[in-house]
Length: 341
Image (cartoon, rainbow, N blue to C red; front, side, top):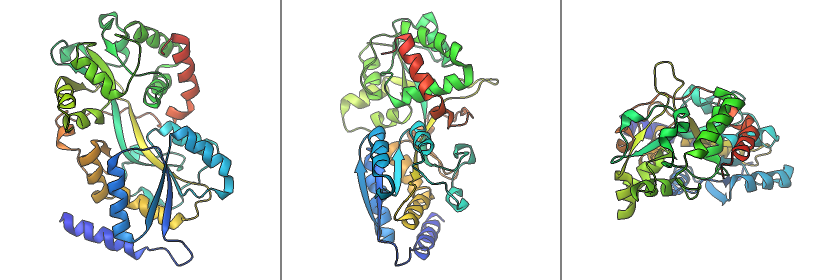
């Protein structure tokens, strides 16, 4: 059945090949740095004959570049790992709205942009991981509880300049208000096991090394550690378990963020870009994502990887994802005010 779907998808994409007025390429400005993306683009090139050109840099650099290039920008698509940056680019007038609803057909409606400026391709949750030796699952509950004094000297997390932390703080501002979020951040800072530093992987490794007991990380990093070819990383992944916060009956659910893309305002290869978007949200491409990057699929017909499935299902915070952009400045202000380095 799957083979039939893949063949059908291929025929559908081929039947929509661009006319001769379009060049046979797509230009992508991408913040993503994962090997799975190269696999996706090569598969798309084989399927359609359309060449995918990728320029990589951090999101702020790419946004500034598009702004400077203006109408002459060669970029067709902007891809980033944080919805806040997608909101920012849309707010700056760098993107065009998707006027063809067929782009959204393979995507869970809860993950869509209410303003139609961006499309998600994967999502992840910012979870709590905890030491299997020193923490019991029953001790964990919510993000709010991370400010509890019982975690003093035990909490690990990366710096406030990280977009994932900024998105989490933005979600708290949306759900709790600025005043309550500021108090929460003060409590969290007081509980740090060390000054924030390193990547999400480094927080897990620090737990394994006994430098802290719990950490805030993106869910897919645990899958990457457990599937690593490095013994040190596998050992770190096995030293912790995953906990999804705020799962109680009257609680909002765990925070999520997306990797997503936007169609630039003057995309010179618009038709080709639309084809790529439809491919990346297809069953075939979504299965490639979940098996290689351990992210969650935006296509409801695609299940997570077996490692991710072992953590169980979880309730997602239904907050408008654009609030992770609109609240970003306030989140940064709170980081600075509360001394989260």
